[in-house]
Length: 142
Length: 154
Image (tube, rainbow over all chains, first blue to last red; front, side):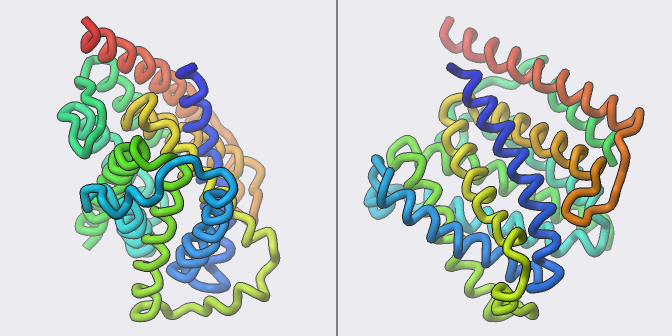
């Protein structure tokens, strides 16, 4: 069953690439920050509908959850803004490499210590090799 | 200036990892759809403020652009839903590596065919090797995760 989660994550990444390419075009007409705003705004509407019809969880948990667990939305915006600002200075290639390496290294650290409520999972040889292979792949792509 | 920008983007990547970890934690209590909705809602609020002060584009032009350019929002929604579903099952790093691989593979395909008015960059030797290394990375992360779990179970 774990395979399904890997496939979902792969599809998620694929969706992100299509999204990036399409929004690149939209950004030329309406502006970059405006494009992110459009994405979050209309996304909220779509999810509002999904939630009304299919939501089985507890949205009200947001009120009593520890406040730091509510930071997901802001962090997404910080990420997006950092990309929008840096691309004109260093180009898309270097920006993406820097983002991805930051993401990989941080994921490993977060999980190793079980920070932010994640399940603790030690860094091991295989994980380091996986990150090294990713860095090689990145350098080859750009 | 360049180095500073690279460091800044590196921080952007760090926030993205933190986001998937935090959302994974929240979703265990609140549910996948609920977590995604909350992320989008709070993101909208922050961006509304940012746009008010820093926006110099034209949101209203949205009515004039070709509709296919607007369809990407469904992809954005799917992406977050999938991530939030995967993190509690396979963990932060496996989810992130797998997402990045999906992203790079499709990126290479889009470049190769020049879809969506992108620059055409053909699949060459270098990029073929890159694909190979991604498959190796995927194999290692799967292995590494399995071993880490077994060690915890033992």
